[in-house]
Length: 181
Image 1 (cartoon, rainbow, N blue to C red):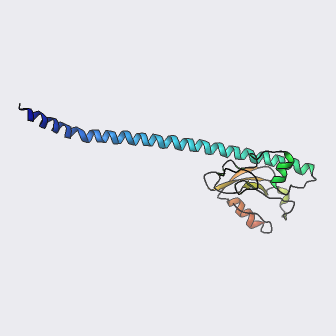
Image 2 (image 1 turned 30 degrees about the horizontal axis):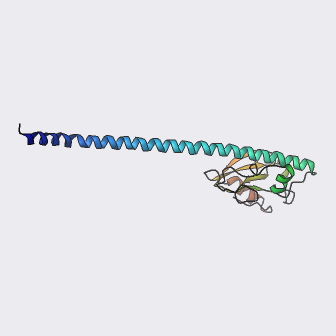
Image 3 (image 1 turned 90 degrees about the horizontal axis):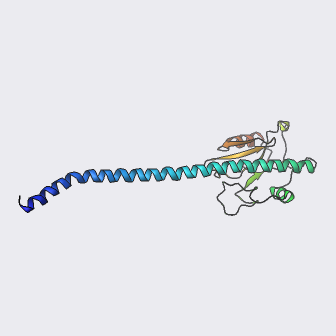
């Protein structure tokens, strides 16, 4: 065989293998990108679930502190969470939602919890049911999806998707001033 024929033969084989090599490189790259997406999504999901649990615990703690405050002050709620925080010597971390993206996590900020002082608000005939909101996330975007955690006067903590329950409550109790998230 002449020397040029080997070069031509190698070139032919190479042209047959090259599409296979490109397909394999594309497949390997696609798998690597998919794995990175899964790892980062999983990390975000776990962190979000952790922040949600911490938020629920903060709200339960604040409810307990509010109960103690009302017991010590003749069934009167504190005028603000700042007064509650100062009277109970509670740190800023308890009065701020961990889902808030702000670097400043103190009350009053737009990133904390909304507190309704029912000592100054008109109460409806259904007050005895204790199904009135006491605390809730100030913003619906704190937990990565549209919704807020709500604490009722009786201590129940629940997830209110889209703030629908709060909107319904505000509509049914229009005389009370309830800021919506």
